[in-house]
Length: 202
Image 1: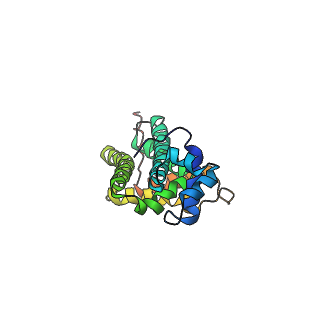
Image 2 (image 1 turned 45 degrees about the vertical axis):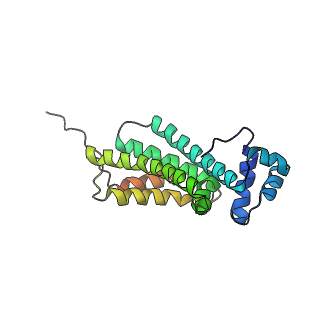
Image 3 (image 1 turned 90 degrees about the vertical axis):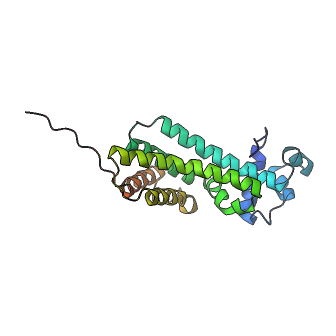
């Protein structure tokens, strides 16, 4: 995917709103330019086609999510439970606070041209590997007892991703409470068993 040019933020915000409202097929470059407060020629200066806008939009969301995960894991402890806790928290917070960025990939990836489809899949694989590596570490260390690591990983990812479609920041559950619940769910799915402290010899 192409790197995004300076000044692209207004265009991407406008495109995200346009695609969310109309879908990629019905969206037009002209409408995106109007939403961004730009002339059509000014938009074409940044992006030559609607496909380029979509690619940039998807990359923007993927980069933001990756950055959130990397920061969370960089501050987490070395244990698998701590790392899964951090990764789930980062995912829940991102999905809850950036629903449009979170859903645009799933709703519009079919609109990507073949050369961009593979790049998007590669991003997804890297995201999946974050969870896979942590779960495998937990099983190896004896912290996670699940006999079904692949299914556990898919369940956690799918459950967290769905938050973007239903979470209401003005609802009964606060974001902090949501994080606590989903971390608990994730640790339950992998059958987390904390190691007991050794008994003190008398």
